[in-house]
Amino acid sequence: MSEKKSTKPKKKPAKKAAAKKPAKKTTKKTAKAETVVGERSLVYIDYSATTKDDGVVFDTTMEAVAKDSGIFKEDDRYEPMLVAIGWNWLLGALEEELIGMKVGDFKTVGVPPEKGAGERDPRKVKMIAKTKLAKHKTRPVKGAQITFGNERGVITAVLGRQVRVDFNSPLAGRTLEFDVTLRGIISDPEEKLRAVVKRRMPGIPDEDFKLTVAKKIITIEMPKETRYIQDVQYAEIGIAADALKVFDDAKEVKLVVTFDRPKPLEGNVT
Image 1 (cartoon, helix red, strand yellow):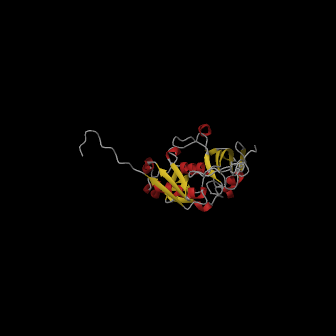
Image 2 (tube, helix red, strand yellow):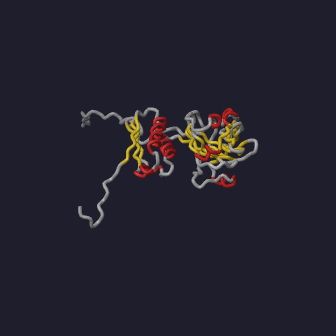
Image 3 (cartoon, one colour):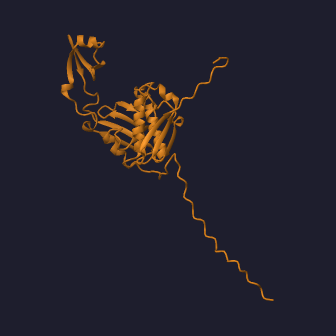
């Protein structure tokens, strides 16, 4: 007896499922990890700055160096500095030397006066009457740092009824040297955003800020504690400007602060 052929159409061999593209997250962009500092990198550095002629340290990001050099201040924060290449957060001559460095690299960078604090200007050395200093509640003592009008200077001599004040920068005319170590390169856009927020509001943990990016709108939920920061509006303007640089295609930044209704105290009748 002949076998009856099936009239059902044969199924075609199943095609291999196409690999699904990973869903885009609204809070971050994927970014290829940077291994070398480029012209638009966001990096962390440690440094110590000295005057070349005498080797005196005048600035540093490291607490141990500050203490050893006698420049430690309790109110200063000693931690790696955030630097955005091309954003003018650092001396241009120093910033240029960071390009091409890798994490862990160390370099000593010399900065001549014309690229640092500038040359000394004799016109900024002025004679001021002691009576005028008295109105500013400033004692005429050699070596004292004073603010006179909008200028800051150092009294270099007390001469009778007058004092000589040098309003040049203490670093004017001097070659500076920076010992720099590259601590990290930030590649992920969300981490960049958190870094610039922390830079503007260093006293508040960066995890207290909630960040989302959707439809080219950056939303930053600010903790209520930011309301107690002096001149917080200027910090917020800076955060918005930096965020728009981190996300090139973003159209706007929203800074949001939410206040909950306080719970009534037990036993109170409303």
